[in-house]
Length: 351
Image (cartoon, rainbow, N blue to C red; front, top):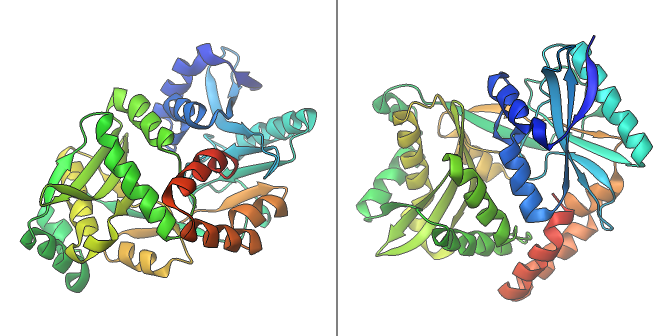
């Protein structure tokens, strides 16, 4: 008979081994991601599991306890992750795990639990899902470079890659903690342009410090005349490379640095033996970005997010409504230094 348990720190080695072997296990499940979120935002990690009679982990799910006066006290699975499926092998295990988490929430007076899944997870009741908002794009890359290139949209992606090469863009890999700074600058600028709070620089430095130890992160820069004009952050785990973050200097978009970097990342990942390139989560309201990712020949996948129960308070601040519109106007009009300070202070409430 399985036993519901809350894992302590000394079980993290066993947990990571379980994640590595589980078909649905991804980087967000690992203790490395736990350490990143803990370091950047100081949210409390909780790793719930089912164990067999010999204390072997047979199912599990990490959550973070987010305490916020703005968005309420809640469970998140997981902050800053595009998805994090429960690691179960059968529906009964999921139901036992879910019931244990809900009972823990009741005892601790936690009001809401957000769980981010992929369409591959079939064991939750669809009626608890939030309105469809996000999709993912997944590209199979274990094939020759010529075949990969032929699958790209000719009038957009292939042409953009050719333009970038003709303009003399140069690829450079980040090789130090200090090398993260240009990305932080580009990313903060891009977020401000869109009216969105930037994640604090300490988050990206935590990614580098922690995931870099096991070579699970890579930052690629496109340089023009010796200056970084675009950058992407890649996360690597098992057979997949994830395009997690990207940003481009607005004045240089005509040079197509983003397609240039993505193509170089795909070639590199394929050459290193990875099977999939994940283009990351996209808000379906951003149809231009959806179409851009479609043109790489990637498969669209739904990302159902579940809220138990539905929370209007969180939604008003994190999704739509007047609060979001007011914040967007303020971010676009305030000086960059103030926006960055606001991101450092407030973003932890919104993850």
